[in-house]
Image 1 (cartoon, rainbow, N blue to C red):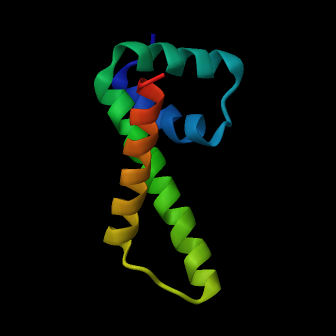
Image 2 (cartoon, helix red, strand yellow):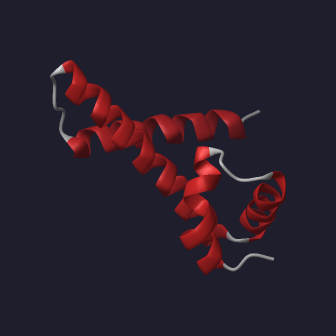
Length: 88
């Protein structure tokens, strides 16, 4: 079983990027099933990744939106998706 420290420092980023082998993915998945703190951490890391990717696209296009506004918008989208998936 993975520890929270291992998940956060060794596996979370690669898990999000899809770069783990099946055993590592399974170990991360099993840990996330039982650990609410690590689930929050991975969720926040995904949000940060989305903000950074969007920021990069906007800079390439020539616009530079406020990062706080962008993060807020992405968080609202996530909350909406989470709410709609829980209603199913």
